[in-house]
Length: 326
Ligand code: SF4
Ligand code: ZN
Ligand code: ZN
Image (cartoon, rainbow, N blue to C red; front, side):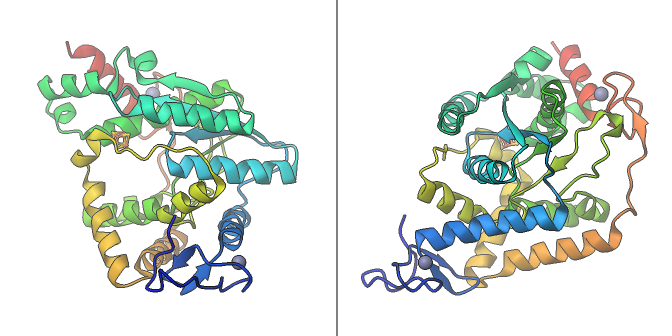
């Protein structure tokens, strides 16, 4: 990994320890950091998220959603370190195989390697196991469906709904009381802005770094330990720690509105370093002020028994449409 700044030829001393050469430049803060100081800063931010939102407790059994990508690799490594330090915390890595040809198989290899490295057994669940169809097959069905609502759903929406449903199911089966998700600061800023751009102010503030720790309605509470970490820094952390991760992109990401918002934020950050953190700060501020205002109706899905705003949850309704389409 190269330190990105003007003085490429001449080594720059680490701003923090002054002893080692810097390998990472953080434009938004003006810091040049050596590998050791950068990794310490990364882990301090995970620890801060834990403190700010009381994510971990002794006795927790945490299902860790692993994708094979950089975010979940960085999350598993950092959580593993914290769990060992705290004691009495068990991590259960879970991977969802959506069934995306040429993408998930490669990522899965890296996820397995990562778990082996840390001494964990990876639990695998799949869309095919849940719906008898891979995501590739579901998308084909969507495209020829006569159900206008099904046909209008983007691949990422379908994928997100089913993935959440599967992880929750697998977490319950594993006896987990929490699910750790590798959403980083960029993901949070993007989700906030996407909802805002869709004029969905409720959606922009409804999601949070931790869901309420009340597992009523069969939904295992979710925690996001990387909420303060920019995406790029998750990749740096993986590189510096030698963690295996898959870099390839999902073929469906081009369908996603998220990609447009992501490009916009990356461009803005390049020109005005710190913009992404400003979006994150705005999100936290609104989330705090509006907390509780958009409480979901506490219905229960009559099919799967999880919390739902309607009689049938989004996942069960989607599964019904998939099985109805030939
Ligand atoms: Fe699923 Fe979309 Fe992510 Fe691909 S890009 S894995 S379809 S959410
Ligand atoms: Zn240093
Ligand atoms: Zn349901």
